[in-house]
Amino acid sequence: MNALQQLSRWIDTLNQWVGRGVAWVTLGLVLVVFVDVVMRYLFNTSFVFTQELEWHLFGFIFLMGAGYTLLHDGHVRVDIIYQRVGFKSRAWINLMGVILFLIPGCIMVITTSWKFAMTAFTILEGSPDPGGIPFRFVLKACLPVGFSLLLLQGISLGIHSLMQILGIETAKETQS
Image (cartoon, rainbow, N blue to C red):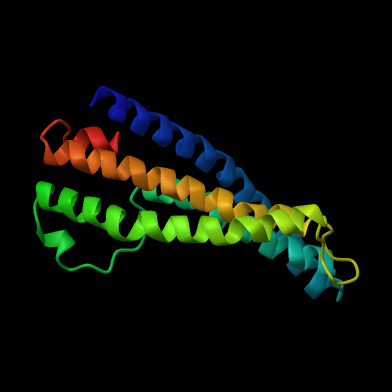
């Protein structure tokens, strides 16, 4: 059990670190959008590079921050049962959700996007638009990497849930 708990702590630390880096990218996105709006409305001009940079940064934030969001239980839940059940029942729901949905879903996306990303890297894919970003392959590489981070965090959530079911861990330990 100690090995599982150490693995879970390592995964949590990794996604915490990645999440902090993504937070800075979010600040960069705000600045890019601000510059784009100022250029468009004050100077009546816009650049393809700036517009593409906006969605590249958003895609990076979304993909690389998914594991961090799961770590902090920030994903949207539409579950009226989950909110009304006790601590161990929530742990069972989380464990079953990880095993039945999160892990298979992440594996499917990782395996299908890997070749897609490698092809983009091989040809150093860039924007097809004049003046666009020449590094589109970097964003495509975020697909398998981001879902790998989410998969790892799902494994950590499964470990935490198992420890809660066995009575080894409490909710307060999980949230720290």
